[in-house]
Image (tube, rainbow, N blue to C red):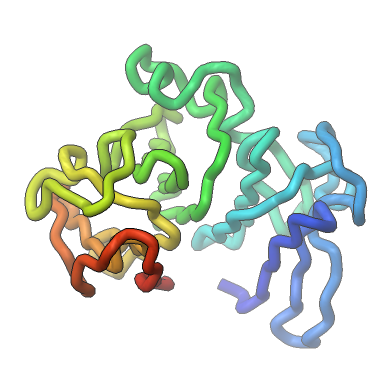
Length: 219
């Protein structure tokens, strides 16, 4: 919301911030070339990250950082306090959904892209499963949002219920003002749109042969 740019720098184990006003870049979270774990509840620049990748920012300006080992961190820009809010548990995503476990009790692993909606719900894709998951802002429960948990080339099951469609690797997410979610399935060359009723359709692209990457989207 303030226009600041956040850059995930996995090899250096930090997240950088480019100030919208001054253009100055600084370390926002993590310690330079200090890979590790721990520090939840403390200053963001004191925590240790492990190859941070996906980043999302909510409407309040809170920054969400995916750490493939520790889970999703939330950093409050006003206090600079960083807290692990999801993904640091022992259950697999499939186990958590089946058993009603919370996101805090679940291990996420290879999140590729992440988005936070105006209500605070978190959406993320897991590269290996071709699936988009949702973390409810109120209950902290996980659910399938699109895909079945198994990737597919070519994609199948659309148009129709999003949780019945088999998708490829979702590399980008974006949401419009009406709440429709757009998902870039690069290996299949398609951008899918899931409306607020849970129906999935192709918004752009044509199915391409496996191995040719082409689809992308941004918020």
